[in-house]
Image 1 (tube, rainbow, N blue to C red):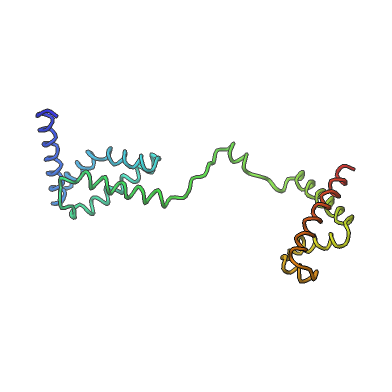
Image 2: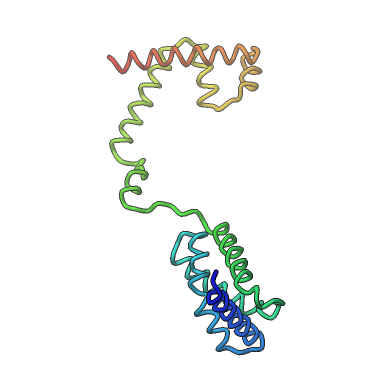
Length: 193
């Protein structure tokens, strides 16, 4: 750094210290000058953290309200910029953590993700599948049908089924596996026919 740059930096620092001291003494004009001078800095820090211009603008206002309230507590006026940056970062993190997650709401995205479960075609298809499964169950042997009905229709647990069928849980698991395979074959043969 050359001597002129150092002197210019010292002059700016002195001006900041003078503005901070004046603002701490209650000078509203000095606080306004600090706001005008450091608003771009606060916005830049907020944008890096929030990545949303509207939220960054809002946070900038909140930061300067906080600065106005806390300025009397600043003991070293020459540290104003670091103190301001610290407040901005902390408030931006708090805002980012507390905001709800954003959801995509473009029409194409909504159309692709929304499912109309009650359209006539899906109702007919569901009805046909249910009838096919019901017919397939009717073609199974009693033990397979009873096992599938207990588990899928009545919602019994493996333990409850073990007690009801008087069989070990391992046997119930095997019966369910075999009964599902047989039902799948029956449903497939009904669908082909």
